[in-house]
Amino acid sequence: MKKLTFGLAAVATLALTGTAQAQICAGFPTIDRGFSFGASVQLPEGADFGDVYGVDASYNASGPLALFGGLTVAEGGAEDLEIYEVGLALETPSIGLMIGPSVSACPQVSVQFADEAGGSTINVPVGFGIGANLTQGTGLAIMPYVIPQVVFARFNADDDFPLLEDESDTFFGIEGGVLVGMGMFFFGGTIDHVFEDGADPVFGIRAGIRI
Image (tube, rainbow, N blue to C red; front, side, top):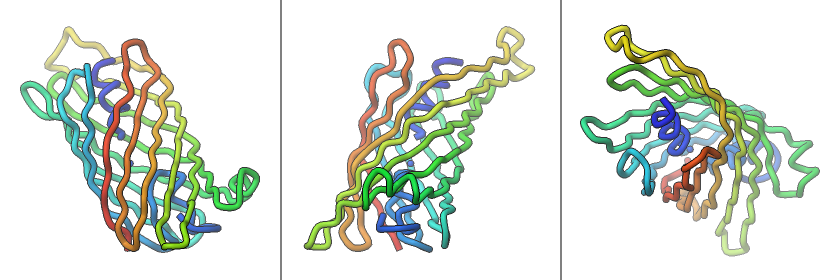
């Protein structure tokens, strides 16, 4: 169960002023009432899976609410591991203003699901993200973000595998990155890390559009 839990957390893997910042704190660069669509690739080392590819989408609603979701595929041995995620973030402007004038902050929660031979795993990351929009005079926006989180994990064994047992676990993780926005396009680098023995940081790249 720990191998699958690490895989889910390692890849789970996902801004202007006021409420328009509501998603850079969640790792998405959308403006108020805007959408984003992106793709990513990660190259983990020393893990039980190969390269990791993902697609994601987000919507920044009018007001503090932001929604996001995606699909991640980790290349494995006998079969690829498909991880589905959906989540939401809630902008808290007062906390962002306490940190800086171009900073957004948001508590967030998501649900990640993966099904494989032997059972299924559900992860529930609960985190608090902080992001900033460092807009340049040329129209270039540099947007760093970091999301510490607690992950609640549950493995449900299939009845066809009597030697496996249901398990629950809780661990800490962190997601972060820097996105560069140029008009409707964005790209950048990411890092994900699970604070467990033997777990290494996982680096990746992202790119997409925002409309």
